[in-house]
Image 1 (cartoon, rainbow, N blue to C red):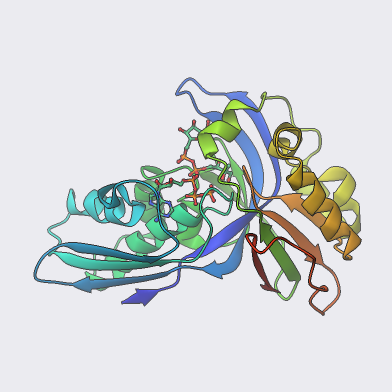
Image 2: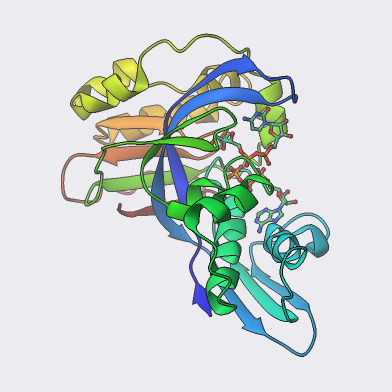
Length: 270
Ligand SMILES: C[C@](O)(CO)[C@H](O)COP(=O)(O)OP(=O)(O)OC[C@H]1O[C@@H](n2ccc(N)nc2=O)[C@H](O)[C@@H]1O
Ligand SMILES: Nc1ncnc2c1ncn2[C@@H]1O[C@H](COP(=O)(O)OP(=O)(O)OP(=O)(O)O)[C@@H](O)[C@H]1O
């Protein structure tokens, strides 16, 4: 079975409090971004994981796809599998790339081996793999709370919207990003802000990581300004960075920006 794990964008992100488990509570809207990896899952004579594309730091045995398989194998008599991941989505980008791989591995294994797990059950498994993972089970726009893994439906349709995402080659680890942010109450009601015309979001929809990280990584602010100068209706850091995105109300792709060749860019339609 071949699947294409997508990325996500955060529209607004408030880090609202410290949790007893050491994590932070947050409020954020998540939407799918069709910048995708490719993951093949096949029954096999023996277990095997192969990786191509962007190099993934760390021991392959800790790869989130593999951990997804091991998590299900603890509860179900799964046969050996061959997993092949072709990595395209930048890592440490705030795009949830690894989390999407893990969630799509759970979904593919559920289907391939007819495990009959419901979306709620798959979300529970996904929560055990990372805070962002559960979103990718249903992959629908949501408001996320707590660790970013408890959801309320969000009536927001960005389909057809032109989007440009720029990854400036900075791997910002999620743990480092959280260590730089002070929890504080949300500055706006995110659901209400997102219900207003996108032209108003610039004033009302903000990401606490952007304020905390931009002084350390000025390129983040420069990219955001470049996206606004190119005509973006709304631009922001995604998640804990370092990818910055712009949403464009017009139907045409924005002009190419004069960016370093090391940057990775996705542009297209949501
Ligand atoms: C920044 C976001 O991408 C926003 O969607 C997510 O909160 C990050 O989710 P993620 O990459 O799945 O993160 P995890 O793998 O669960 O956690 C990595 C590290 O980030 C910190 N972390 C993560 C999520 C959270 N709500 N509070 C935290 O403090 C913890 O130090 C944790 O050890
Ligand atoms: N399939 C995978 N893709 C990416 N990273 C993975 C994967 N499996 C395990 N990892 C580990 O997770 C680390 C990246 O986590 P990190 O949260 O910084 O990035 P991410 O998963 O791409 O998500 P984000 O874009 O939200 O930051 C890597 O250093 C790697 O060791």
